[in-house]
Length: 255
Image (cartoon, rainbow, N blue to C red; front, side, top):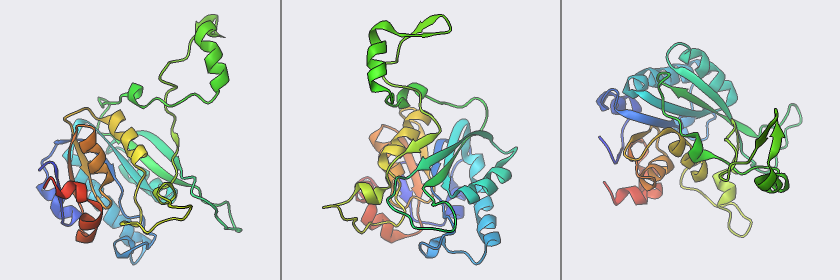
């Protein structure tokens, strides 16, 4: 099962996926926000039962050196962390600052983030920090430091030419804003696509060429697309055939 996206239920898919075969999983599951039928549950209890069930089914598929990322709301992520306690190694709670335009809530602080949980199967996981360095913010200061350095604890520190190490706060505009035409947002093939550049960061940091990347709840297919472009193998599942036809045209050429 590789280099394919299967149209099937997540539990059926996981039942047929080989144990300890996945190096990296990037998972964008339902949020229980009723953005579509697949994201609608009768109650919070039903949503959490579904979420915990797919997590339980997924974990055996990960290699001992593997890791995974899960997208969701901060509230749901807090419940996921509690469930995963003792089942996997917690690494980061990543805050995705979506830079998603105006909000108008006046009864509390306006939401401008989503949570991304980063876990590993064990302490022997892959993480390539050098591949995901980001630009320094103090451009002028760093330019000066290139030649003379900055004195720190009695030693001269020189900036890395590839930038600074990546933090756990990520700023990526949502896909609906980056895909604007003439300043206007466009109708998308999927209601909740994730930014391609953000997925690239995850794939580069947590896998090597030739590794198998798992994309549960494939939706827009961006995880599989990025994995393919970066020389990884991929496998995914998606229940909605419409998304496959409209969003995954690049993948249909391969399956």
